[in-house]
Length: 386
Ligand SMILES: *Cc1c(COP(=O)(O)O)cnc(C)c1O
Image 1 (tube, rainbow, N blue to C red):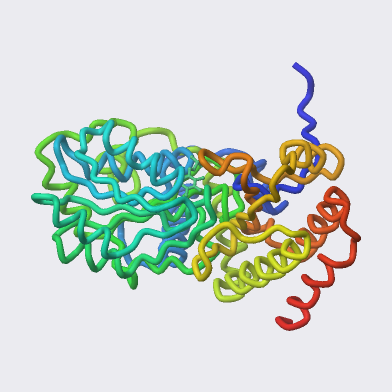
Image 2 (cartoon, rainbow, N blue to C red):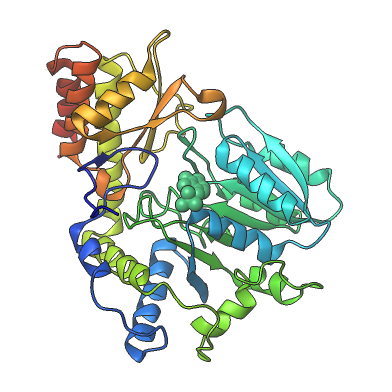
């Protein structure tokens, strides 16, 4: 084993994002026991802070041990029983993954498809619900990281509730980058992840369940299929009983607590405005380089910028040069978008003016454009918005 000496990278891919030095420092502080009164107090603070971030009063708002996908699995595992009808929006990798997770848990999945880069329409969800007998759940991805599409939530949650179903939203890439407003949007269940706009290493998945969702959990006929992710057991640790279920990942909780403190210091309004400003500046610059947005107009994420590549460009070669010559990571297209798009993340700490400039400069060099055109376009956006 050599000593660990990772290269210096600017992380502008689809996650993980850059982590603030204060978060890294928090992770290297000494451990306490997971039942230590100090740690339990810290957990209470983390829960309060997550409620403010999600925009919810839900008592059951906790960080699940595991990455965003563990949160996805936790939400479905706690709500689904054999044969439950579940309507899922499928317009990218993560909607597709939700279908896979739900069907493995025994759900009867009714997928609502849209082109990658498009959003799921309320009317299509209503049609799918009408084809069900007794739909249990509707699930969509708020911020589709594989395409850059920003999914509106309120309309779909209305349609779901009219049909007597619960509304679930994947907010892995949206939380802490744009408003999520769980309660105002009528979302019953949501999960997120620490490694995107929270700018914390991968390893925890904040989830929130409202009372309707907790009633669905309490009235299950069968046990939750996953012991590790069973919220009725985990609740006894986060609740007043403080019963051991599994050892909380202490250092990850330190990291999340510090990341949440940084978010509170900045303020959500300023943080969202920063994400929007840097997105607009980056897109203006990329457009000068001939890279146009891939997601539908009016539905483009601030934190994940998906751009179409010119025909014949050997994109993998340029990405490799970005990584090894410039120290910058960006993301490739996935599935049907492989080789057709790049995905540039401006999430949390990664969403900084200096990072936008550094990437535009590096891409200008690699795409044989002069250094000034793209930077000038970005500067115009910054000049208007300061
Ligand atoms: C990243 C991501 C996930 C999965 O999170 P992991 O941390 O990779 O497990 C789920 N949904 C969306 C929208 C994501 O961007």
